[in-house]
Image (cartoon, rainbow, N blue to C red):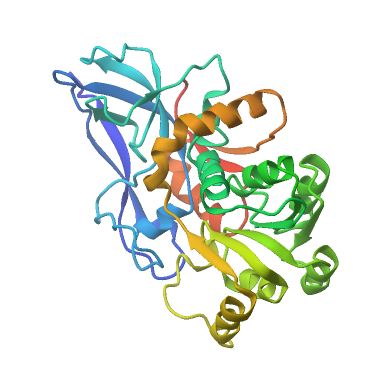
Length: 341
């Protein structure tokens, strides 16, 4: 009798700079068997996220590295295949943190039930999942924008940036989004209704910034870092508030970038403009999920917060799809569909 298998995508090599498809391998192991109190689940949707590059090593991050041969961890949507746990029946849909593999086995801890009738199940990986929670936490716990101020979001067309931009708009901010490409700028202005949007890939990026920020920046939600952050520094107002959610432009390059040293300029902004910069890590705030869902789920249901999802089909296509996160090839939250629900 053929033994059921569990395919995994594991780390094959630590990348030097940007990740490559060859940094991953697809391997097969016997499918786990649940014991007393355990739940065997079959993943159907797998989240692909920029922070996963940090887990691979040789990156700008304090996160613990995964070992060579270990599957990439991360959020998934799954259906319970077999259960020896009283709280999880076979056929139930759950959110897990089991990563890039077809099956997972847990004792119930770390599993969260979802109702497939309440919203598309993929939303639990995007606007109603960890990316939406990231946006909500950054805005609610680390920023206190002045009413009517200019609120800038980098990577504003992304899964985190688009949510925080809309939340800030609903709270009376003049929101300016920064994204790469004319189509993403159009999406931000016409579909999300932001006050303005700027294309960082355009040759007149600097001129676009000047037009969009006549009154400077009161609040910045930073997802990118690199030259975009440097371009924004002259616009920081007195007592500007900045939260650093991510720095995707620097994830693969832990050393100092080439070019002029802008650190003295940043230090002067701290000193003379009283700029405040905060950073945070989402795992410290998973207990905020109920409060987040209580506010954001009704907004999504009412169409007051829009969201985009970019699906890639096929388990074996995950490594190549993952690389799209770092060249702007995805439009919205990147999710791999590996099985029918």
